[in-house]
Length: 90
Image 1 (cartoon, rainbow, N blue to C red):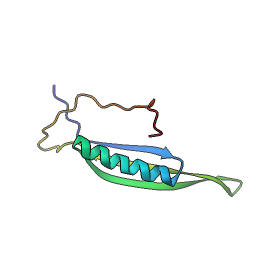
Image 2 (cartoon, rainbow, N blue to C red):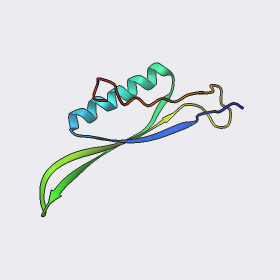
Image 3 (cartoon, rainbow, N blue to C red):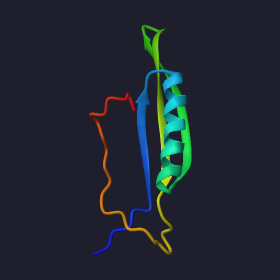
């Protein structure tokens, strides 16, 4: 049986706007190098409040990769990996 990975949507938390910008650029470069498309990107700033006072913030980032065309796929993907022990922060 051939499995065709068509698209993947992911969401992560990052701590700073600088991290968000670097991460977004890395995603675009990775997609280009590996031959797939970064088709959607969004970032949302969230405030952490305590007793009505803002005590911190973070960012939720969501993106979608498109790997192939569902109607006429050409590249089967046999494995998708997520790395959690990389030395880089993302």
